[in-house]
Image (cartoon, rainbow, N blue to C red; front, side):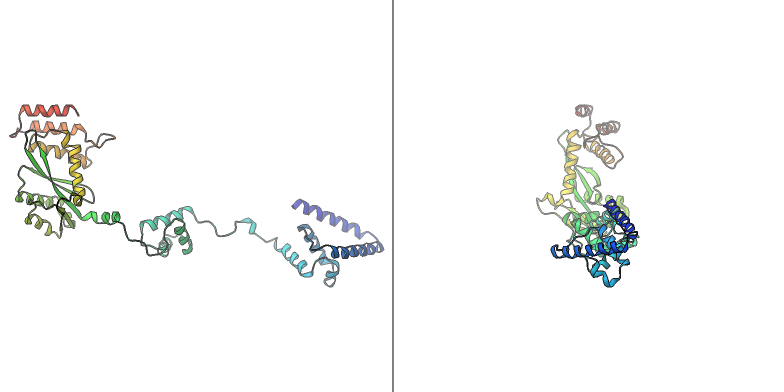
Length: 360
Protein backbone atom coordinates (compact mmCIF):
# COMPACT_ATOMS: atom_id res chain seq x y z
CA UNK A 1 0.00 0.00 0.00
CA UNK A 2 2.80 2.44 0.85
CA UNK A 3 4.69 1.69 -2.37
CA UNK A 4 1.54 2.23 -4.41
CA UNK A 5 0.88 5.60 -2.76
CA UNK A 6 4.45 6.76 -3.44
CA UNK A 7 4.11 5.70 -7.07
CA UNK A 8 0.83 7.57 -7.57
CA UNK A 9 2.14 10.72 -5.91
CA UNK A 10 5.34 10.64 -7.98
CA UNK A 11 3.33 10.27 -11.17
CA UNK A 12 1.08 13.19 -10.27
CA UNK A 13 4.05 15.43 -9.40
CA UNK A 14 5.73 14.68 -12.72
CA UNK A 15 2.48 15.42 -14.51
CA UNK A 16 2.24 18.73 -12.66
CA UNK A 17 5.80 19.66 -13.72
CA UNK A 18 4.96 18.94 -17.35
CA UNK A 19 1.83 21.02 -17.02
CA UNK A 20 3.85 24.05 -15.86
CA UNK A 21 5.88 24.16 -19.09
CA UNK A 22 2.86 23.88 -21.38
CA UNK A 23 1.11 26.80 -22.98
CA UNK A 24 -1.81 28.64 -21.39
CA UNK A 25 -4.23 27.90 -24.21
CA UNK A 26 -3.58 24.17 -24.13
CA UNK A 27 -3.96 24.09 -20.36
CA UNK A 28 -7.22 26.00 -20.44
CA UNK A 29 -8.63 23.67 -23.04
CA UNK A 30 -7.61 20.62 -21.07
CA UNK A 31 -9.15 22.05 -17.95
CA UNK A 32 -12.44 22.59 -19.71
CA UNK A 33 -12.40 19.01 -20.99
CA UNK A 34 -11.67 17.65 -17.54
CA UNK A 35 -14.41 19.73 -15.93
CA UNK A 36 -16.97 18.56 -18.42
CA UNK A 37 -15.87 14.95 -18.02
CA UNK A 38 -16.07 15.33 -14.25
CA UNK A 39 -19.60 16.71 -14.50
CA UNK A 40 -20.67 13.79 -16.71
CA UNK A 41 -19.20 11.25 -14.32
CA UNK A 42 -20.96 12.82 -11.37
CA UNK A 43 -24.30 12.39 -13.08
CA UNK A 44 -23.76 8.69 -13.78
CA UNK A 45 -21.68 7.52 -10.81
CA UNK A 46 -22.92 7.45 -7.28
CA UNK A 47 -20.57 7.65 -4.35
CA UNK A 48 -16.92 7.48 -5.36
CA UNK A 49 -14.49 5.69 -3.03
CA UNK A 50 -11.04 7.26 -2.88
CA UNK A 51 -7.88 5.47 -1.90
CA UNK A 52 -5.42 7.03 0.60
CA UNK A 53 -3.14 8.18 -2.21
CA UNK A 54 -6.05 9.98 -3.91
CA UNK A 55 -7.03 11.70 -0.70
CA UNK A 56 -3.46 12.83 -0.01
CA UNK A 57 -3.12 14.26 -3.52
CA UNK A 58 -6.41 16.16 -3.43
CA UNK A 59 -5.66 17.50 0.05
CA UNK A 60 -2.29 18.79 -1.12
CA UNK A 61 -3.75 20.50 -4.23
CA UNK A 62 -6.45 22.12 -2.12
CA UNK A 63 -3.87 24.60 -0.84
CA UNK A 64 -3.24 25.84 -4.42
CA UNK A 65 -6.89 26.46 -5.28
CA UNK A 66 -8.99 29.27 -3.76
CA UNK A 67 -11.50 27.92 -1.29
CA UNK A 68 -14.50 29.49 -3.05
CA UNK A 69 -13.78 27.34 -6.10
CA UNK A 70 -13.39 24.02 -4.28
CA UNK A 71 -16.94 22.96 -5.00
CA UNK A 72 -16.35 23.46 -8.75
CA UNK A 73 -12.92 21.84 -8.95
CA UNK A 74 -12.94 18.95 -6.50
CA UNK A 75 -15.45 16.09 -6.66
CA UNK A 76 -15.99 16.22 -2.89
CA UNK A 77 -17.44 18.74 -0.49
CA UNK A 78 -15.18 21.24 1.29
CA UNK A 79 -15.94 19.63 4.67
CA UNK A 80 -14.74 16.25 3.40
CA UNK A 81 -11.61 17.80 1.96
CA UNK A 82 -10.81 19.54 5.24
CA UNK A 83 -11.39 16.29 7.14
CA UNK A 84 -8.93 14.53 4.85
CA UNK A 85 -6.35 17.19 5.51
CA UNK A 86 -6.79 16.98 9.29
CA UNK A 87 -6.46 13.21 9.14
CA UNK A 88 -3.31 13.55 7.05
CA UNK A 89 -1.76 15.94 9.59
CA UNK A 90 -2.88 13.89 12.60
CA UNK A 91 -1.42 10.72 11.18
CA UNK A 92 2.05 12.12 11.73
CA UNK A 93 1.52 12.20 15.52
CA UNK A 94 -0.76 9.18 15.88
CA UNK A 95 0.73 6.50 18.18
CA UNK A 96 -2.24 4.16 18.35
CA UNK A 97 -0.52 1.50 16.28
CA UNK A 98 2.48 1.40 18.62
CA UNK A 99 0.52 -0.30 21.44
CA UNK A 100 -2.41 -2.64 21.83
CA UNK A 101 -5.84 -1.18 22.56
CA UNK A 102 -7.26 -1.30 26.08
CA UNK A 103 -5.64 -1.46 29.48
CA UNK A 104 -2.27 -3.14 29.95
CA UNK A 105 -2.60 -6.74 31.12
CA UNK A 106 -2.25 -7.41 34.85
CA UNK A 107 0.97 -9.12 35.91
CA UNK A 108 0.35 -12.87 36.49
CA UNK A 109 2.17 -12.65 39.83
CA UNK A 110 -0.24 -9.99 41.08
CA UNK A 111 -3.22 -12.07 39.96
CA UNK A 112 -1.91 -15.10 41.85
CA UNK A 113 -1.34 -12.96 44.94
CA UNK A 114 -4.92 -11.65 44.82
CA UNK A 115 -6.36 -15.17 44.57
CA UNK A 116 -4.12 -16.40 47.39
CA UNK A 117 -5.18 -13.56 49.71
CA UNK A 118 -8.84 -14.28 48.99
CA UNK A 119 -8.53 -18.01 49.69
CA UNK A 120 -6.45 -17.66 52.84
CA UNK A 121 -8.74 -14.92 54.20
CA UNK A 122 -12.33 -15.95 53.37
CA UNK A 123 -13.83 -12.85 55.01
CA UNK A 124 -11.91 -10.36 52.87
CA UNK A 125 -13.66 -8.70 49.94
CA UNK A 126 -12.06 -7.08 46.92
CA UNK A 127 -11.87 -3.71 48.72
CA UNK A 128 -9.95 -5.18 51.66
CA UNK A 129 -7.62 -7.08 49.34
CA UNK A 130 -7.01 -3.89 47.35
CA UNK A 131 -6.06 -2.07 50.55
CA UNK A 132 -3.61 -4.80 51.54
CA UNK A 133 -2.01 -4.67 48.09
CA UNK A 134 -1.57 -0.91 48.40
CA UNK A 135 0.28 -1.48 51.69
CA UNK A 136 2.63 -3.84 49.83
CA UNK A 137 3.29 -1.19 47.20
CA UNK A 138 1.29 -2.87 44.44
CA UNK A 139 -0.52 -0.35 42.24
CA UNK A 140 -3.81 -1.82 41.07
CA UNK A 141 -7.39 -0.64 40.75
CA UNK A 142 -10.19 -2.11 42.90
CA UNK A 143 -12.12 -3.01 39.76
CA UNK A 144 -9.14 -5.07 38.56
CA UNK A 145 -9.14 -6.99 41.85
CA UNK A 146 -12.86 -7.60 41.39
CA UNK A 147 -12.30 -8.96 37.86
CA UNK A 148 -9.47 -11.26 39.00
CA UNK A 149 -11.61 -12.75 41.77
CA UNK A 150 -14.59 -13.14 39.47
CA UNK A 151 -12.47 -14.90 36.84
CA UNK A 152 -11.09 -17.27 39.52
CA UNK A 153 -14.61 -18.24 40.62
CA UNK A 154 -14.36 -16.42 43.97
CA UNK A 155 -17.12 -14.15 45.14
CA UNK A 156 -15.68 -10.59 45.27
CA UNK A 157 -18.32 -9.51 47.80
CA UNK A 158 -17.18 -9.09 51.41
CA UNK A 159 -19.71 -11.61 52.75
CA UNK A 160 -18.66 -15.18 52.22
CA UNK A 161 -19.95 -18.54 53.51
CA UNK A 162 -18.82 -19.55 56.99
CA UNK A 163 -16.07 -22.13 57.58
CA UNK A 164 -16.81 -25.78 56.93
CA UNK A 165 -16.60 -28.51 59.54
CA UNK A 166 -13.03 -29.35 58.56
CA UNK A 167 -11.88 -25.74 59.02
CA UNK A 168 -13.86 -25.38 62.25
CA UNK A 169 -12.44 -28.55 63.82
CA UNK A 170 -8.93 -27.68 62.67
CA UNK A 171 -9.18 -24.31 64.41
CA UNK A 172 -10.41 -25.94 67.64
CA UNK A 173 -8.03 -28.91 67.59
CA UNK A 174 -5.15 -27.11 69.31
CA UNK A 175 -7.00 -27.15 72.65
CA UNK A 176 -8.45 -30.68 72.58
CA UNK A 177 -6.98 -33.76 74.30
CA UNK A 178 -8.56 -37.22 74.17
CA UNK A 179 -7.97 -40.17 76.50
CA UNK A 180 -8.84 -43.85 76.38
CA UNK A 181 -7.73 -47.22 77.78
CA UNK A 182 -5.79 -49.82 75.79
CA UNK A 183 -5.67 -53.43 76.97
CA UNK A 184 -3.00 -55.96 76.01
CA UNK A 185 -3.03 -59.72 76.62
CA UNK A 186 0.35 -61.22 77.57
CA UNK A 187 1.81 -64.58 76.58
CA UNK A 188 0.27 -66.15 79.63
CA UNK A 189 -3.34 -64.95 79.48
CA UNK A 190 -3.17 -61.86 81.63
CA UNK A 191 -4.69 -58.54 80.64
CA UNK A 192 -2.69 -55.33 81.13
CA UNK A 193 -4.11 -51.83 80.75
CA UNK A 194 -2.46 -48.70 79.41
CA UNK A 195 -3.88 -45.16 79.58
CA UNK A 196 -3.27 -43.29 76.32
CA UNK A 197 -3.62 -39.53 75.76
CA UNK A 198 -3.45 -37.81 72.36
CA UNK A 199 -3.40 -34.14 71.36
CA UNK A 200 -5.80 -33.41 68.49
CA UNK A 201 -3.77 -30.49 67.17
CA UNK A 202 -0.42 -32.24 66.78
CA UNK A 203 -1.54 -35.92 66.93
CA UNK A 204 1.17 -36.45 69.53
CA UNK A 205 0.50 -39.31 71.92
CA UNK A 206 1.32 -39.50 75.62
CA UNK A 207 1.41 -43.00 77.07
CA UNK A 208 0.74 -43.37 80.76
CA UNK A 209 1.78 -46.12 83.13
CA UNK A 210 1.00 -49.81 82.74
CA UNK A 211 -1.09 -51.71 85.27
CA UNK A 212 -3.16 -54.84 85.62
CA UNK A 213 -5.77 -53.16 87.84
CA UNK A 214 -6.62 -49.61 86.73
CA UNK A 215 -8.32 -48.16 89.79
CA UNK A 216 -9.67 -44.66 90.16
CA UNK A 217 -6.66 -43.54 92.23
CA UNK A 218 -4.28 -44.89 89.59
CA UNK A 219 -6.13 -43.00 86.85
CA UNK A 220 -5.96 -39.76 88.86
CA UNK A 221 -2.20 -40.17 89.19
CA UNK A 222 -1.87 -40.52 85.43
CA UNK A 223 -3.73 -37.24 85.00
CA UNK A 224 -1.32 -35.57 87.42
CA UNK A 225 1.66 -37.01 85.55
CA UNK A 226 0.26 -35.60 82.31
CA UNK A 227 -0.16 -32.17 83.89
CA UNK A 228 3.47 -32.28 85.07
CA UNK A 229 4.76 -33.26 81.63
CA UNK A 230 2.72 -30.54 79.90
CA UNK A 231 3.88 -27.82 82.26
CA UNK A 232 2.41 -24.44 81.32
CA UNK A 233 0.78 -25.94 78.24
CA UNK A 234 -1.63 -27.82 80.49
CA UNK A 235 -3.66 -24.62 80.93
CA UNK A 236 -4.13 -24.41 77.15
CA UNK A 237 -6.27 -27.56 77.11
CA UNK A 238 -9.85 -26.43 76.58
CA UNK A 239 -11.60 -29.80 76.14
CA UNK A 240 -10.92 -33.34 77.34
CA UNK A 241 -12.77 -36.11 75.53
CA UNK A 242 -13.29 -39.37 77.43
CA UNK A 243 -15.81 -42.18 77.67
CA UNK A 244 -18.11 -42.97 80.59
CA UNK A 245 -15.91 -45.66 82.16
CA UNK A 246 -15.96 -46.02 85.93
CA UNK A 247 -12.18 -45.54 86.04
CA UNK A 248 -12.61 -41.85 85.22
CA UNK A 249 -13.72 -40.61 88.61
CA UNK A 250 -14.55 -37.12 89.84
CA UNK A 251 -10.99 -36.50 91.15
CA UNK A 252 -9.71 -37.33 87.67
CA UNK A 253 -11.95 -34.65 86.15
CA UNK A 254 -10.99 -32.22 88.91
CA UNK A 255 -7.33 -32.30 87.80
CA UNK A 256 -8.36 -30.94 84.40
CA UNK A 257 -11.12 -28.63 85.63
CA UNK A 258 -8.58 -26.88 87.87
CA UNK A 259 -6.86 -25.69 84.69
CA UNK A 260 -10.14 -24.51 83.13
CA UNK A 261 -10.64 -27.61 80.95
CA UNK A 262 -14.14 -28.71 80.04
CA UNK A 263 -14.84 -32.46 80.26
CA UNK A 264 -16.71 -33.89 77.26
CA UNK A 265 -18.11 -37.39 77.83
CA UNK A 266 -18.98 -39.50 74.81
CA UNK A 267 -22.27 -41.30 74.43
CA UNK A 268 -22.68 -44.93 75.34
CA UNK A 269 -21.25 -47.27 72.69
CA UNK A 270 -20.32 -44.38 70.42
CA UNK A 271 -16.59 -44.76 69.66
CA UNK A 272 -16.78 -42.33 66.75
CA UNK A 273 -17.24 -39.49 69.21
CA UNK A 274 -13.64 -40.16 70.25
CA UNK A 275 -12.50 -41.21 66.79
CA UNK A 276 -8.94 -39.83 66.91
CA UNK A 277 -8.07 -41.65 70.13
CA UNK A 278 -9.76 -44.83 68.88
CA UNK A 279 -7.68 -44.61 65.72
CA UNK A 280 -4.51 -44.31 67.82
CA UNK A 281 -5.46 -47.43 69.75
CA UNK A 282 -6.04 -49.26 66.46
CA UNK A 283 -2.67 -48.08 65.13
CA UNK A 284 -0.88 -49.35 68.22
CA UNK A 285 -2.48 -52.74 67.75
CA UNK A 286 -1.83 -53.06 64.00
CA UNK A 287 1.72 -51.70 63.93
CA UNK A 288 3.01 -52.87 67.28
CA UNK A 289 1.06 -55.12 69.63
CA UNK A 290 -0.15 -57.60 66.98
CA UNK A 291 3.47 -58.17 65.90
CA UNK A 292 5.14 -58.99 69.19
CA UNK A 293 4.45 -61.28 72.15
CA UNK A 294 4.20 -59.28 75.37
CA UNK A 295 5.68 -60.94 78.44
CA UNK A 296 4.61 -58.64 81.23
CA UNK A 297 4.27 -55.05 82.39
CA UNK A 298 8.00 -54.30 82.16
CA UNK A 299 8.21 -55.64 78.62
CA UNK A 300 5.13 -53.67 77.55
CA UNK A 301 6.56 -50.46 79.02
CA UNK A 302 9.81 -50.97 77.10
CA UNK A 303 8.06 -51.67 73.81
CA UNK A 304 5.73 -48.68 74.13
CA UNK A 305 8.62 -46.42 75.11
CA UNK A 306 10.58 -47.41 71.99
CA UNK A 307 7.51 -46.87 69.83
CA UNK A 308 6.85 -43.44 71.28
CA UNK A 309 10.47 -42.41 70.68
CA UNK A 310 10.15 -43.53 67.08
CA UNK A 311 6.89 -41.65 66.64
CA UNK A 312 8.41 -38.48 68.05
CA UNK A 313 10.84 -38.42 65.13
CA UNK A 314 13.98 -39.69 66.86
CA UNK A 315 13.90 -43.02 65.02
CA UNK A 316 13.01 -43.60 61.33
CA UNK A 317 10.45 -45.90 59.76
CA UNK A 318 11.04 -48.59 57.17
CA UNK A 319 11.04 -46.84 53.73
CA UNK A 320 7.68 -47.08 52.04
CA UNK A 321 5.95 -48.63 55.01
CA UNK A 322 4.13 -47.55 58.15
CA UNK A 323 5.30 -50.68 60.01
CA UNK A 324 7.77 -49.85 62.73
CA UNK A 325 11.36 -50.97 62.18
CA UNK A 326 11.82 -54.46 63.64
CA UNK A 327 15.12 -53.30 65.14
CA UNK A 328 13.11 -51.28 67.64
CA UNK A 329 11.42 -54.45 68.87
CA UNK A 330 14.75 -56.24 69.11
CA UNK A 331 16.14 -53.35 71.17
CA UNK A 332 13.14 -53.63 73.48
CA UNK A 333 13.69 -57.37 73.71
CA UNK A 334 17.35 -56.94 74.69
CA UNK A 335 16.37 -54.34 77.28
CA UNK A 336 13.95 -56.77 78.91
CA UNK A 337 16.67 -59.39 78.94
CA UNK A 338 18.98 -57.06 80.86
CA UNK A 339 16.20 -56.29 83.35
CA UNK A 340 15.33 -58.71 86.17
CA UNK A 341 12.72 -61.30 85.31
CA UNK A 342 9.23 -60.48 86.47
CA UNK A 343 6.59 -62.95 87.57
CA UNK A 344 5.89 -63.95 83.98
CA UNK A 345 9.46 -63.87 82.76
CA UNK A 346 11.42 -67.06 82.28
CA UNK A 347 13.96 -68.40 79.79
CA UNK A 348 11.22 -70.35 78.08
CA UNK A 349 9.06 -67.26 77.73
CA UNK A 350 11.92 -65.26 76.21
CA UNK A 351 12.57 -68.11 73.78
CA UNK A 352 8.96 -67.88 72.65
CA UNK A 353 9.43 -64.12 72.23
CA UNK A 354 12.54 -64.72 70.12
CA UNK A 355 10.53 -67.03 67.88
CA UNK A 356 8.04 -64.20 67.50
CA UNK A 357 10.83 -61.91 66.30
CA UNK A 358 12.07 -64.49 63.79
CA UNK A 359 9.17 -64.00 61.35
CA UNK A 360 9.49 -60.18 61.24
